Length: 354
Image (cartoon, rainbow, N blue to C red):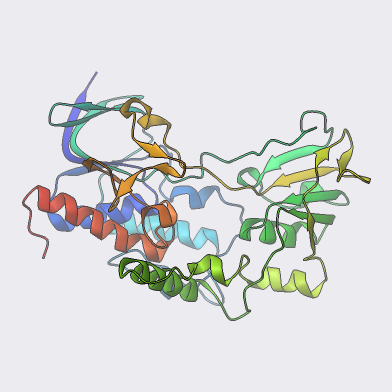
């Protein structure tokens, strides 16, 4: 098998991997980015077509080059895909695709990355695989007996398949709100959540959320009380489709059902029918390729110190949300954590990145 050697291997070619590539190029480090997608654009190319950003284009940028303006409102996912593809070209980032990383092993001097093709040796690894490839399905009684359609938000595309049906939307996040807003234009929808929802004020968008997350990180670093950050503000960002759904009176969540039946659900007292369920229940980090490393973990996941695995300063994690840095799962937030991660590697390699 062919083996390629680099100072740094970045696993994942989405927004986090590209941000890492930008700073690795500035640092003068030799690197390669391995991406399992067939085309540039990261997971944005797999989202449902109607998905929009929470912020204007000028507040949704990777380091170095702003996202081109969008004609009005918040940009759709397709605009983000175009931006990421042009970003990759602009900085001539060395992305190899499609490359499926199978496993990462420690070897003398660094790591060996085995893929479905060549293998790669590196002194350091930046893991930026995101979560989209690992949708989380909860376990509820009766799921196997339910005779209707079940799909995860990761597989949702358009509301057409639900026209005229009675559809349950499960989940208390923004994906659930946006998908419900769209499906409710063609079907009867029932929204199920585990807790009472709090809707953000209409004038709060991604710009405010990024500032709040940044302020929380600063406060915690200085030993101040935890404000709760974005979670303290609320659950649902009121993007235009969700506002419109509110005006139609369909944004009413009900407590989670206790079980599914062959043709619907029960809350333990009454039973109702459903034709379909969309599980908007989130995702988990895509980390199976790291199993051979036997990384130290606690109840919340692999233990990190300053973006790197505890005791392994050359194994970095990037782009997984607050776990790897405030707002690091966002376009505007990932640049800051990418810069910090690469600075650590650059100092270890005695490369000046002033």
